[in-house]
Length: 154
Image (cartoon, rainbow, N blue to C red; front, side):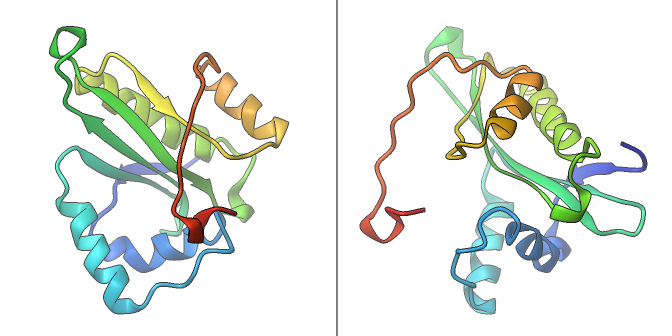
């Protein structure tokens, strides 16, 4: 990996982030400009939520993930963190960009005093599982979810 700059996303990153998310789940509905703008404002203003982006020297977003730090009354009051929407643009894969963004998210969680970082993947691809294991994540818990009917197949 060379030349990747990792930073929190800002207001001007919305269009590029929406393009990048097409490489995460290409079956998602395209949001209207009004909806995406409203949701993006909510994301940027949400305490404890950071979207980290990795940009290449051309300025293109190559990778991203979302980190959410959650206050907690257990574990001596130490927060925990969730990582979601880990994605690398198809033309930038296998260059370490996804790993760099993921590592930055974990480092930010530790800096925030979190005692653990969790993520889930719906992928059945062994390469995806290997990616997370090589990044230090252990498959040591059982995850459950419930989805609204319109998102059952996602």
